[in-house]
Image (cartoon, rainbow, N blue to C red; front, side, top):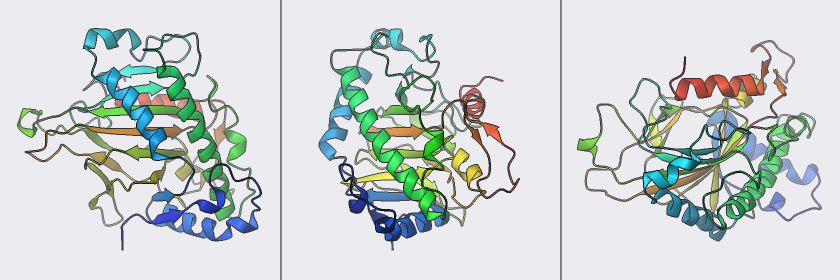
Length: 309
């Protein structure tokens, strides 16, 4: 049996409208099992097609292959309206601060504003179209998650009203892992250090190259392949707090490729964050975790991964 279950989302796929909470019962049970036991699930039949993913990866790769001086004007930190939007150069970020900088580049689509600096014709439109598709799927998953816990179906949705605006930190992140020889890497350096995600849930779309690993309950890292036609979804830290540890935010990482592997790796990650002003507190009424402001928590995690004290 696979470490991470594959769950069929057909009953609530994008485009379906006449769905009752009762119709979702079996789906809720499968989602709850995956998120309590593993923290990750593969969803198939979501309504997001491979050609949509390929389109975003293609336009992202064209950007990543530009000379550094062409990418620098789009750097993260140079956008006044959103500090997380833009290009992140290789080794800038350490998702495990105990390791050297991660061997990856990223472009964070954290703002959808049309009048900010975008790299090329079609870049913004392609990113925004996919962002909105991921948003719609995410809201459906959040509803199923609430129902799976016996909660009101809107309990998580009410804290995600502003996805796609500058009042919400949700980000579509294009990730590019350039070819690398292990002997050229620094001591303990990998493509993406061990970490858990920060917000509610994350949607992940991987290219076929291996590397992603997830820590299981036995504290062993298990490889997580790309399964064509699926979306990999995981629980993030604020959701674990929200559910008083019922849903598990699992540690994961991306390793260097094997010695003879000179291929690139790409992925897209849609990091779903509650609205900036949302206060996340345990939905079971306990005080297992103190209430926390969504934006404050996000910024504290950025400070760690970008080396600011």
